[in-house]
Length: 184
Image 1 (cartoon, one colour):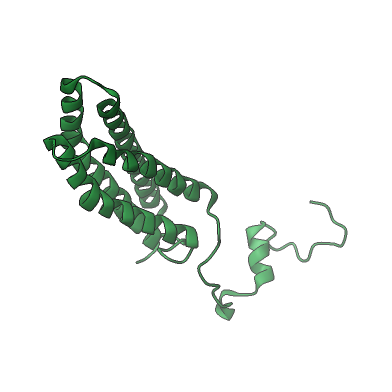
Image 2 (image 1 turned 45 degrees about the horizontal axis):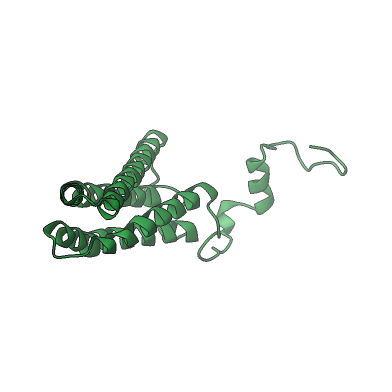
């Protein structure tokens, strides 16, 4: 895939951030409803909270997770970061895929059982604790971009020498070598 143009990259980046934000918000609502069901002593409140979970949490959360995944893949393929070129991107990709699968195959059945009264709502406390932590971890990775490349790429002589690349990065084009003892 070719590099995304600036406007397209920014559009996908905004969509990625908004879908991740929606996912975090839906997860917060999940936490409120689960805690309400666990803390309340009123059977009507417990039932309403669990039914609201069944209606609200799974499918919107899964859609937000898949939108985050799709926009992240497009950004990975269309920018210099790649999908598995940098460790932090690969980890975010793995976390996103894992969480989407957990929503579909673990959270959905657990919520359905709790809403039907056949399951224990205390089992829903684990996703309420773990999911925000993983989403926060992915957000921190996006900001700090730790760990570098998965593997170092060999120097490509066709790209020019490293000193010229550094000069371009530091906006020193055409000025020749920096004098000894020069201050920046």
